[in-house]
Amino acid sequence: MSGNSSSRETRRELIRELIEKSNIGSQQDLLMALSMRGVRVNQSSISRDLQEMGVVKVRGRYLIGEPYIPDTAEEIREIIGMVRSFHAAGANLLILHTPQGLASAVGVALDRAAWPEVLGTISGDDTLFLATASRREQIVVEARLAQMTAS
Image (cartoon, rainbow, N blue to C red; front, top):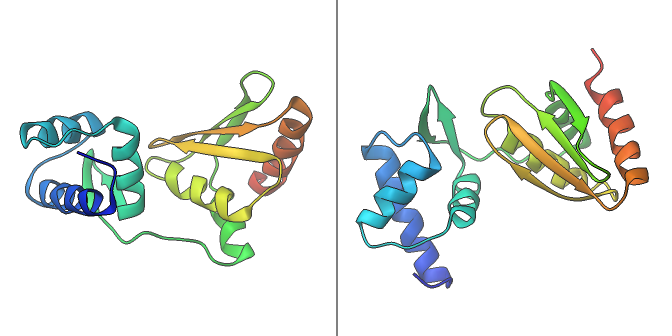
């Protein structure tokens, strides 16, 4: 399947159908179901599709939800405040842990916050990788996270 908009929309329609009619519980399950229907796609495209489609995982099964995009600084802080723990992994990577199913929402909130120290995020179900350019920037992000997650 090519990367054009039309094929992406067709793939997403099929993803929606599979999620609504089947018990899809992982990206691997979805990749196999798509493959059985002749759709070739990589895991990163599936991950992006799921996030942009507002797919959520509930009790081990994907469901179509409405994507929540925080708009205000207060909403962004509230979502980032859901981070349960975080720790450095090397000189420019932070690992953040969230309640199950919320890593993507935290990643979106971090993207919307547009912190200059953050180069990018990759979200799983309850774990998020956050990259910075240097250890110094990593320390700034750690301090900001510590302040926002203090209870």
